[in-house]
Length: 211
Image 1: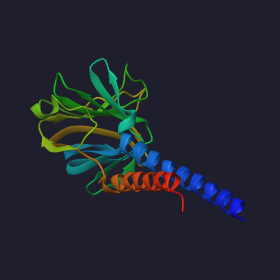
Image 2: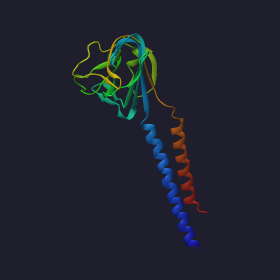
Image 3: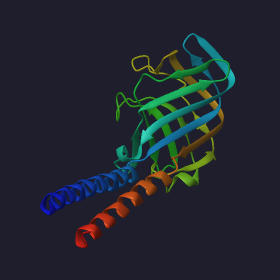
Image 4: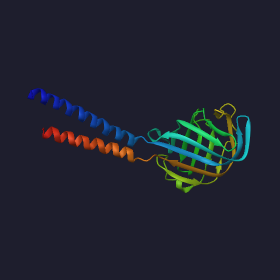
């Protein structure tokens, strides 16, 4: 009887330890790879599908992951998983052309662009220039909102169009430009990591001092 109890106790401890390690490592992985949202906004002129807009406010929202940011010869590049644009009076559209966010710290500007032909012949969609706050930024943390002069795509490449669910986009002149990056609250990740560490400590103590 005692042997069976000890064997069951050992199996339970091994299972508990494995679960604790899984929780702990899940917390570590979540802390290393964080979702991040880049937001570009302003007032602009352009065309979306068959509709033109002038002096209309717009917001571009880009979802990315900090673990995928790469250093491309001194500039930082974040592949975008999902990007949308909301244009006042026209509504929301989703980019179907692959996109990215790039940061050139030397020129202090951030760009939202197509990534289909990166690094050659990609098409900038929104570029915000000359803000000192960008000189020490690497796209991996929250920042902003910061404002500054911006430019769009005044001459879209017909061989590399900017395609959305509402048709091709041409974002030309931009004013009142703003850029912001935001990351989610990490408290839940810290709680998950803490639970795993506490469970590991309890399991190890139980193994050392069995009931």
